Length: 460
View 1 (tube, helix red, strand yellow):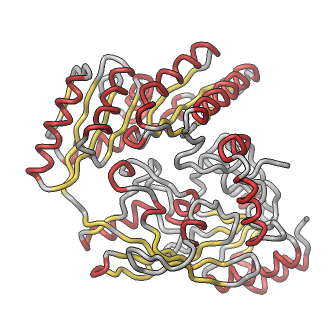
View 2 (tube, one colour):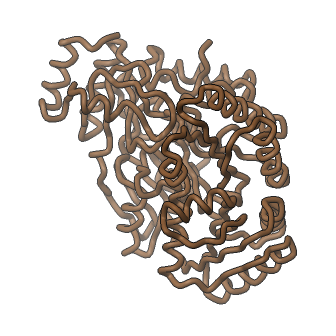
View 3 (tube, one colour):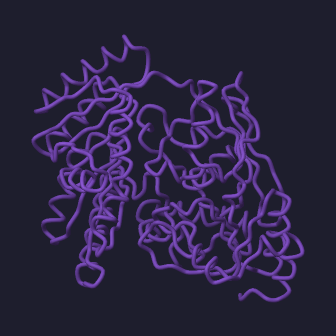
């Protein structure tokens, strides 16, 4: 329903005129994330400062059946925070404080708007860090990571966001403020409600406070391996995953991605299939791990293995890798760049890489691939001319067929970007009748359907 003057007056009285906006510029700024999905503006943008204000907003919206969409950083890649039904846009990025560092317990309590890199920069003084490392770490917020159960470059060794969330403060659609979980490493007490909220994409409530477990910041050493073919690189990935040792990061870049990244960042990486790795631990242990991984890579046909990078070289290397998606967008300005994030069982990773390129050749689709190869995650960038509907349809067909194949071998349509708008069509194929159980859970939390509508579930 459209926002009425009654609601606008309520919001202005609650927050003040400076934190409520219907200006077109503000509506447009919150109409689209980093995905290719069509923009859709909210009716009003608000900037709450605490759980109590959000509680009042949700209670009013629930009574009036007004859609509410949480917006944290806007860096999502599947349209997750696009307010497709308008309504109230909750901009949470000003709630960006560290509430408490519990150094002795290796924990931190934060608000949802704090950016991942900024959090780790502040934790560095304590010798601690939060590991998942999403590719967009310079803009990704912790709230957004919780909403999507984000992972990233360190997931292969350290796990994903849900593995670090101990306790949450959540505002339910009724306005009730609840705390779920406990600030301890393990618990067998009741249902794991934290795991339910993590990855729910703002469809069950609004997270306003997050307690994370942390890890001790280790020594880090990077290495780069270059291969004659994608198949050889994929074989090395499988062997490393199967036989170890496990690097802290194991990233794949195909020649197209390397060329684009070189062009965009001014890097000089060899334009060939490349594995970028990072090893954490004590110096002696790291040295032994690198030797074993180098042997594995050589056995798979590696033509170059570079190690012993300086800290500055390592930073430049990871900056280049993190820029992969942005580089694709900027270097191909006349194209629409759609990015997938399929995950397959590690034994099928080589096959998944080959399948992507075979499908691309069959359908005449331009692709570039990279990903968190250590955990079976492959990002496929599909490029199509913005002025060519037929090419765009071929890209969609490629994505559908690739995801259908991935699901047929036990994989998933999304490893870290979430479902949002773009992956809804695959939800029944992946989950079957259990999707209806998810709908029932959504109904229990949000019977009026106000929380981030149009996401996760396909239209009935």
